[in-house]
Length: 483
Image 1 (cartoon, rainbow, N blue to C red):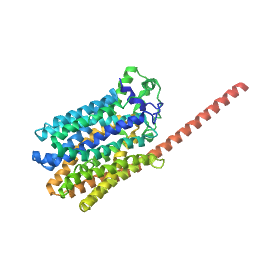
Image 2: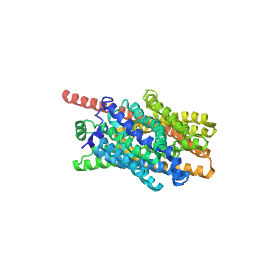
Image 3: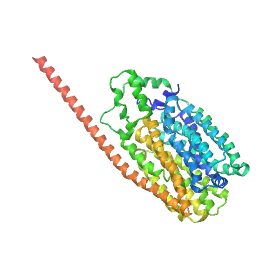
C-alpha cells in the first residue's frame, strides 16, 4: 500500500527532506504537469483542419479543448481519493495509459462527438490523474524550497508546449491529423515513466504520526493558514475505529475548507479568472491565421509564448522563495493575475505579426507567473497537509468556467466575426479578480496579524497567571512550613 506516504506532510513532527530524491520527483512532476497543461493547448494546431473536415463552427471546435480541460479539472476529486489511497506513482501511470488510449481511439473518429468523448472526456480524466498526484507529492518532499520546487515543476507546461507546437505542425504536414493523433498517443506514454519516479516516502514516519498526540491551539482559526483546525476533533478521546473513519472522511472530503477565509478568497477569484484564462491561448494560433499569417508562423507564436513561459516560471519560483516576497506571496499572485488582464485588453491594439510576437512575449510572462504561483498560493493558504483535498475541491468547482470559457469566447468570434471582443472579454475576466485578490488578501493578512497578536497576548496572559499561581502556591507552602 503506497497510500500512507502521501500523508507525510500532515505530521507536524515530520520534516520534508527539501532535496535528495525530491529533485527526481520534481523532474517526474515536470513531465507529468507538462503534458497535463500543454497537451490541450498544443492540439489547437489541428483545430482549423478538424473544423473544416467536420464543417463545424469556432464555438464547436473550441469545445474540444474545453471538454478536455474541464474533464481534467472535474477529475480532481476522483484523483484526490485515488492518490490518498494508492499514492502518486500508480495513479500517474494509469493516467498516462488513459491519455494514450484516448488519442489512439480519437484517430479513428468519424464525428466531432467521437473526439469530444475520446480526446475530451477520456483524455481529460487521464490528464487529471497526471496533474493532481504531481502537485501533491511535491509538498511531501519540500517545505523550505517548496516555491522553487513548484516553479520548476510547473515549468514542464511551457517546455512541453514549446516542443509540441512545432512538432504537431510537422506531424500534421507529414501524416494528417489522424496519423498525428496516433503518434501523440505513443509520445504521451512518457507520463508512465514520470510516474515511476514518484517514489513514496518512508512509511515508518507516517505510522508514528498516527499514534502521536497532536495539540493545536483552539483559538488559531487560520494560523498563517498552516494549522489544520479541522483536525482538532481528532484530539478528543474516542475509539481507534471512529478516529480512523473521521480521518478518512476528512482526507477525502474536507468540507471545513468552505469555512476557511483564505480558501474562499482563492476560490471566488479563481472561478471568475478561469473564464478568461485559457481562451487566449486556445485562440492565439487561429487568431494569427485569421489575420492572414501562414500556419508555421502562427504555430511559432505558441512557441514564443511557451519559451518565455518556460523561463519565467522557475524565475517566479525563485522570486517567490525570497524572504521579501514569501511572507506576502498572495500580493505577487494578485499582480500576476492583473498583468494578464492588461495584456489581453491591449492585444487587439497590436499591429500585424510583430505586434502578435510582442503580445506573445508579454502574455508568456503573465501566464507563466500565474501558473507558477497558482498552486503554491493555495498551498500557502491551506497548508501542505490539506492541499490534496483543497485542490480536488477547487478543480471540481473550476471545471465550470474552464469548460465554458473558450466556447463563450468562440461564440463572440462567431457573432462579431472578429477576435478583438474575445480578447477584451478575457481581459476583463482576468483584471477584475486581480483587483479582488489585492483587496481581499490585504484584508486577510490584516485579520491574520490581528489574530496572531491576540494569540500572543493570550499566551502572555496565561503564562503570567501560571507564574502568579505558582508564586501563591509557594507562599502557602512557606506559611504552612513556618506554622
